Image (cartoon, rainbow, N blue to C red; front, side):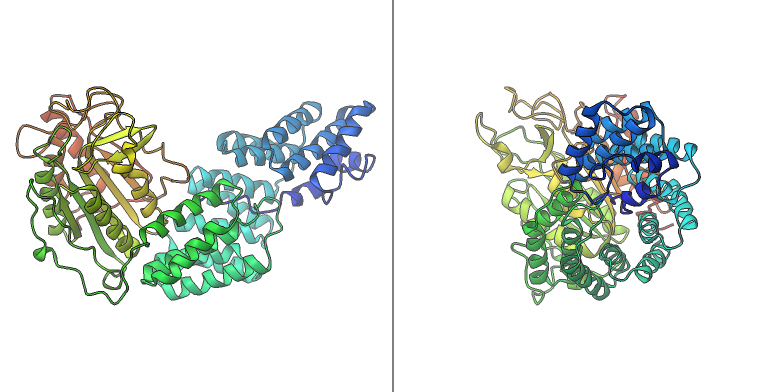
Length: 571
């Protein structure tokens, strides 16, 4: 979802800044050096002082510092960095390094921000605010151990540091320590029960623990507080907490199967004005979930067909997938898989093996206890419905596996999976007839499960002239390949707890194979059910086998943000 904001007010650091700033401040104009001055007035007052050219050294550094504060209020971080850099040149100071580091953090330059916070701590006495801010940067890098150490230092410096408890709890949650996370968030709420931010975090913890009623109750209180008492902290963009509260409460309603209230919350999240990247990311999640719920069945619908009742598809006739398990039938701890194999393409090069690959992987996952939704040779309508049903049901799963075999392409940096009825015509909007991989990722990215996404697909662009001449590979033509998972669409994230595996390296073609299965899927179906084999070790074995089988022509590739060891088959 979204990164945590630097939730402690930067102004606290400014008001307790070093002696040189405090002394110079008293000799300069109050509009320039008062933290409550509106941003435009503050910037204008500082501009006039600079134009006088009567101050130099530490005093001029102070003016640049306070003008940077004005730019920070406006969110113009490039100008914050420019002014603080000039202030540091004139007179290095702990508060100035802290402000510049915060600006770099807000720009997403975490390593530079950490370097500035390091310099700030070297210049002055230990400062809890700076430890907190550096902890935020480490947290944004997913270096949770260092982040927790910094939040520990911030709490030692100020045992009433509400947001240090909150952010430390979020780090523990990311590491899977839900009880430790809950203890920290509870302490933050005890310290200030009027704040909405800690309640938003506790909403996600209760959801991760499967206590959906408590998640909804905390989400409701967070919505009320965010409406009645919006955060006044200049480091917290307007509406960001309200958007988070709506989104996370909506996810809890959805997991409970209360689709009507979930829709209302997702719609509310989308109706609030978003100004920061985190809020826009949450709104992207709300938009995806709302789309998935557009045709959601009522909770009273009859139970889904069992795997034994599913009808095998034939290459000449697209299968009608059995519906995914309803949320009411899916308990916490459930392991679910979506398996699709497309090969009987009508208008591009057909692939003989994906249906076999899908069946082999589905069989291996069922044998180790996964609930599997399986479909082969799906047209766009069937593929879209099966994907939507699975993403809805996965709201209550602990582990979700997605496996796709068939054609896949990259267009303008986004990856698409190809239904069997796709027609690739010059000048047409071909993406409208495909399944956006980013939508699947966003549909699973809600911080409470482990996601394993495996794509045995081509890495070629369908827009080249050789559209229908795919050859022996899972490609539509030999070109640029799929985009890496770090290049997601606007608002999408590769969240913590996700692993994405591709059958081949970027820029290469995944072979369909000469036997009944592709080299990748043959190896995957053999190793995926090995008891006691950690998932990344399993993929290493698959990679070695594929490299050997293909004589180095194909090298599987993966990207992981898993936070611990994951075993698909129990030890």
